[in-house]
Each structure stands twice: as C-alpha cells, then as structure tokens.
Amino acid sequence: MDEKLSRVDPKLLELLVCPLSKGRLSYDREHNELVSEKARLAYPIRDGIPIMLVSEARRLDE
Image 1 (cartoon, one colour):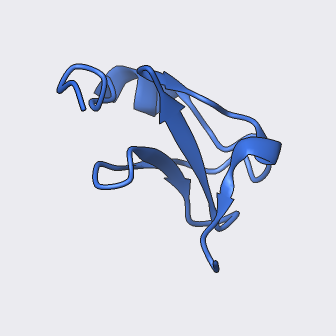
Image 2 (cartoon, helix red, strand yellow):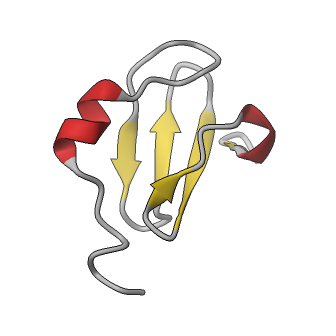
C-alpha cells in the first residue's frame, strides 16, 4: 500500500468523531482503519479517505 495513503493526518483525526457514539477515534495502522472503542466499530480508510458510515464499519467483536 502506498505510504501516503496509509497515513492519517493527526489534525484530521482530532476533528473526526464516531458518527454513532460521537466518541474519539484512534488510527489502526495495521488494518488502515479508524477505531471507535466506545462503539466497538472500525471505519475503513479507502484511497486515503475515511469512510465514516456505520453501514461500512466493521464490528470489533467479529
């Protein structure tokens, strides 16, 4: 994967919140996802763009 596409701008991460829980997100570099521990969801990042849709998120208990 292209190194530029696998990074998340820290400033963007400060602004984004989980659309379900409104909680903070953390970046999971290994899976290239933004993780909401509160909602137990992981939002994918595709082509450098976070997909902040609950319907696209992966449940963390899976």
